Length: 345
Ligand code: DAH
Image (cartoon, rainbow, N blue to C red; front, side, top):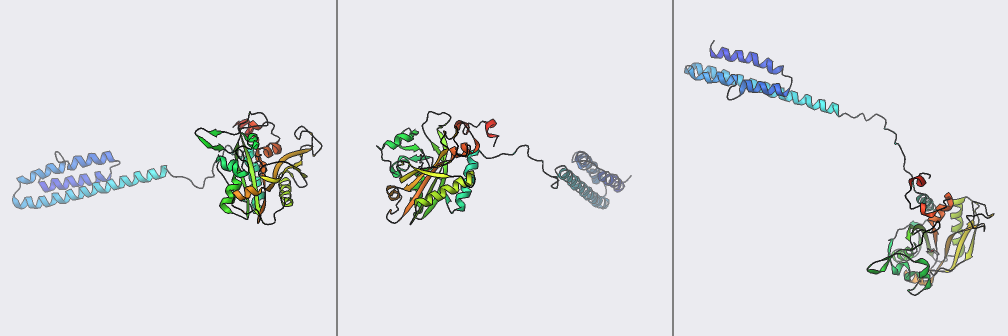
């Protein structure tokens, strides 16, 4: 058989065989078998070209090159085809049915009782035009005491022993949210309406009623012509909001260094409806709302002229409000992280 016929024969065998290839391994086998430089079938045939006459060699050489090109094209086409189907198979495997309904969550989280009360009060106060402010928990001695009319030697400091920071004699873990009063006045000036919910710390021997970490909610209103009666109105709104309309409140005189006059706001015990029970110490009243008219010295520290502006301030025990609302008997449970306790809310 002459060389051109053998080349043609090779082609007629090879092209359908390449077409029938099913995977990349087979494809490589065919590529090697036909075109490998050492022993490929076409390579071998081309070696025989040198034995032909010049004219015949030209002719057969041209044919060989054409066949080589056709085989290469067929191999490349097959490779593309295999890659394409691998790709679609992968897409098929990874397909996500976005119309399928989601699995329902096994458990739903919920707020801590302190947070529930905090949110309820934030809602009430923002509806009355108050800003909600924040302040540092690691506070300076100045903002925590001095600026609030409690100078260094004042006995009122003894009532609020706290945690001091080693090497920083002027820093304390704030004992109340009141320091943010002066910070707010300095930042925003008058008039001003703000509440400050937040964490406070005291050096306490803990028991069911005392905890080293607890929450308060401070309030501050400053404007011209502010009166004690307006404070009472706000206290009444809080009582109605938290414990139902018609909850009675009363104000009794009490000393706080940063207000003058100062008061402890009390509300009728909602557990016994004022009859007297264990929770209200058999008085029928709960003391939960301390407040008063902002002391002129505090206004001055805040950069506000006491001749021009007045204001009232209050500091609710948020933790205490939560304990009362939910009948929690031991304050230590609130910071305990005990799930058995927390899951009840
Ligand atoms: N800061 C006080 C405390 O922790 C509570 C308080 C009383 C805040 C009277 C006030 C206030 O703003 O006017 O015991």
